[in-house]
Image 1: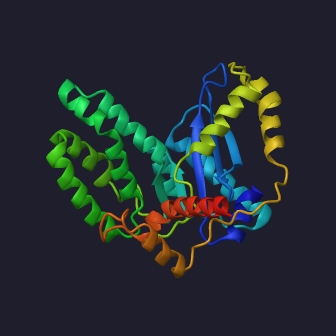
Image 2 (image 1 turned 120 degrees about the vertical axis):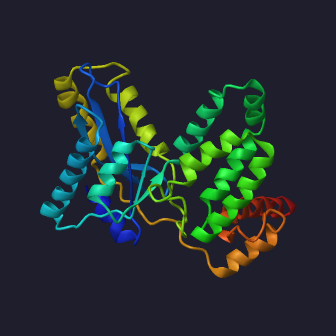
Length: 298
């Protein structure tokens, strides 16, 4: 629970990852898990709960219980700025009810997985091959959309991508993407808005789920009482020690850094719709290469 407070003390923006995992107990119950990440993107558990069903009511009760404990024990009013999850409607409904002011971000791993599954199920072989052959370019366009800093930049970029896609890809694929990912932006937040350092995937949480199955249940389904007594106690014990680490995200680089990034990456910029922050990772990568070359010369 203190991970919530430590993150709030370290920075203004707070975020959580939430999901459920199955195949742990013989009666079919699932484990709801919620956590955050430190500055090194290591997952840190906040709370978990056994639930008979993965539905809106279960997530509401789960989130309300955490909020009540934080208020009663630490006098802390919990309201995360961002919630990262898959596209499960029950999670969105619960989060929207409990934290109406929070921005709900769709996990990018699940976004790419949904698009890839759609292409895999495409009926016409010629169109399916065309989409598969251009998968890397489609991913690149989606990543550019995700790196938009403002709604205006997002809309301008999508208009360019939509025009390009209509010339190259099947019309039904463009309509699918627009209906599934563009038209419901009131539900799922796309725009980053200077969120430098925040992880936009649930990979840390998924890794935690994998560790539970491999380490604690040994890839076997076990009875509920055994899971509560033997496994859940160990999970909470192992995740409750003080890591003595910072939750501060990557600091916003100074304007001089952005200018240098633009100078080094001017050939990478695809037009005025891209903000410099979208190219910061490329700048860091290129700068490291330059540093290595200088060290070799010495």
